[in-house]
Length: 267
Image (cartoon, rainbow, N blue to C red; front, side, top):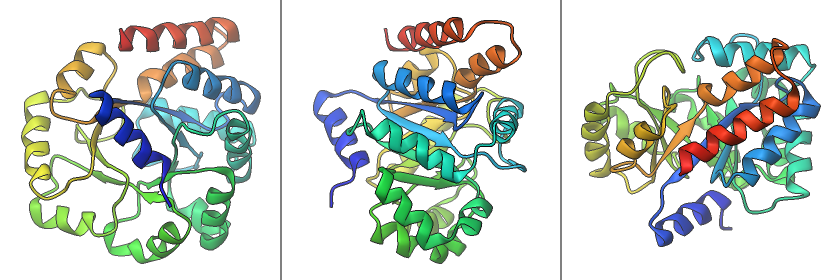
């Protein structure tokens, strides 16, 4: 069975374009507004959408994403309501790939087979579990393959050739290259370092490579897309939601700000 992620990258290659991937947290700032944001992202020609499911101890996330998780938990968002968000989205949009991103504990508590079965049911195409190392892939790789959910892996500037081979064993869809050391949204990527790393990775893997962490400007995207297959916008996008959650602006203004931001990135 063909996965939407594979279709999207094939489509982009044929058009000689690069992927623009966005990240939001499910239920942030609340479940009703989260639906509107998701629809907006799709209407703004985002190629793939990452949806984070909230967790109380998001250790790999920077302050902006941590706060988004806290707001989502406050709005009583969990995996079940996240699946509901995606199901609602799929009732209107069938082609845009959806990737769930989060931590292993909620998935394990939900039940692994039940989780992946639900992913297939609502239309999830990929999964990024940030705290599950390749050595523990046996927990999810069987179900990911059975239910046609790509197991997308994070790689970093310190991932050497030997480690990369271990990471690639059960990776599918694309590789998510973490362009900076540390937590999300706190540093800017060093383009020369990313370029050198991706060049080495391409000698081993034919998977698309998308770059994330610390990307917020069109100039960064243009530089990185000279050698990467796409870029991920996370914290820069979530900051607009944070501004709204602090009642500094109206919901309409927030949606307009996100819309303007995405348009500027794509001009």
